[in-house]
Amino acid sequence: MTTRRSLTLLALTVVILTLSTCARSWYRVREEESERVRTEVKIFSEPPGADVNINGKHIGATPIMVPMQYRYRRVIYARERSYAVVRDTEERMIPEYINNVFEVTVTKPGYEGQVHHLQLRGEKDMEIHVPLPKKE
Image (tube, rainbow, N blue to C red; front, side, top):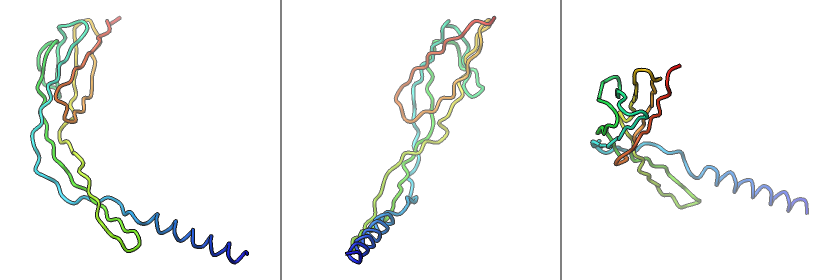
């Protein structure tokens, strides 16, 4: 009886070890040519009329709509899977955005300035509402 139990435990251990090593980690296969992406960002402030700077460049006063451009490419990752005698390759497409982080600074005399770090990921449009507290 104990020999049978030992063989069963040994068989289960082998199966668990085999299944845990079946899927290998993801590796980068290829990437497609990058494309331009454009997101329309509308910036509002309370009170309105605040100055807006994006990455240190003055853009205008709130409310304002700013077209933000950055790059996007599709990256293909793959991993091999093998179960007993069957072996195949699984692929996944993961989007990768390039130069898509923007620092948005909103200031107005008499109010505390606010800084937002905006990370865009292919949205068509976006709104930012910035409350500016009065300076004491």
